[in-house]
Image (cartoon, rainbow, N blue to C red; front, side):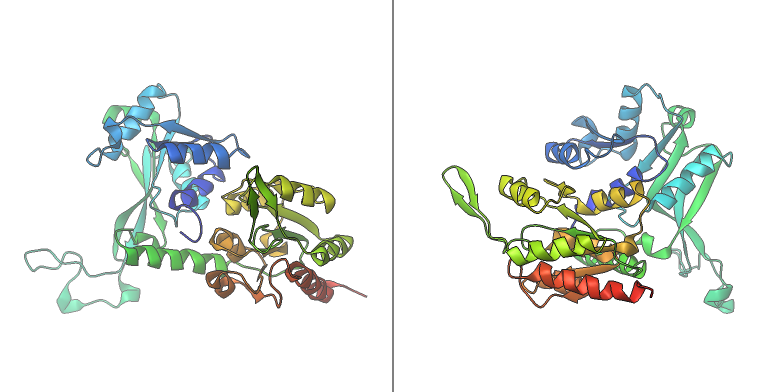
Length: 365
C-alpha cells in the first residue's frame, strides 16, 4: 500500500498517538520478525503471538481482544482496538477516541462516518428520508455509520461486556472516504490513491535543510556483484560525493537510509563522512516521521531522493522529491522532479545543484 505493508500505516500512527503501548497481536511469524527488525527505534511497539484458536477464519475480533486482555490481567486503563485494514486512520482519530473515554466521561468510543446516501429497506420503504420530500444534500444530516477504524473502551467495560463497546458510547467522526473497505483489488487501488492524494495535499515547500537519500538505485546503479564470500562490489560516482560535501557546506544535513545491510555501503558512508546513515530499514516512512518529530523539524524542509516503491510514501510527504532518470516509472510519476542523470552517473550531483539553486530564493541580501 503506497510502498509499505498495509498494517504499517495504522501502526505508525499508533506509535505517534497518545497510546502508551502498541501491541501487534498476530500468529504470523514473518510479521513478528518484521516488527522486531523495523521498530527498534521505539520502545512503544511489541509483537505478541496470538493463539491458533483466536486466529482462525471464523474467530471473532473479540476473542483475540479478550485473549490478550486476560493474559495482560486487564492491567490497563483503556483498551484501544485498531484495524490494520483501515490505513486512512490517523493519530488524531486515535487521540480523539481516547479523549472521549479519558476526558469526556464516556465508557467507550468508536469512529463513524457521516453518509448522505439515501438508504432503503428490503420491503421497498426508505430508511432515512421521505422520497416525496427529497432533501438537498446540504440540508440532509445523513446517517452515522461505523467504519471499523478505531474503538476504545475502559478496562472494566471490556471485562464486563466481553465487547469492544459498552456503557455510554461516544463517537468520533472521520472523513467520508474512510468508509471504503478493502474487499477487492479495486478497493485497494481506491484507498492507495486516497493515501497518495492525502500525502500530496499536505506537502509544503520550504527552504531545504535536510536531504534523505536511498542507496541502491540512487547512490549505486542498482547492481551488486556477488562472489562465493558474498557481496563484492557496488558502483558509486565520485561526483556525487563532491556534490554532497558542497551541499553540507551550504548548511544542508544529509541522511542516508537503506533497506539493506551492506558493509560496502557502510564503508562508503564513512568515506563521505555521512554519520546519519540507517541500515536495514524497510519502513523508511515511519523512520522519517520519527526523525522529524524527535528533532522538531518540518517535512517541508526535507528533500528525498528515491528510486523504487518503498520510497514512495516518504517522497509524497516531503517538500521536494527527486528521482534518478532510471528510477521506476511509478516513482518518476510521483516525484516532483526527475533528475537528468541516472543513478551512479551523477544523479545525486544534479540533485545537489538543484537544491542549492532552489535555496537561493530564501537567501536575503
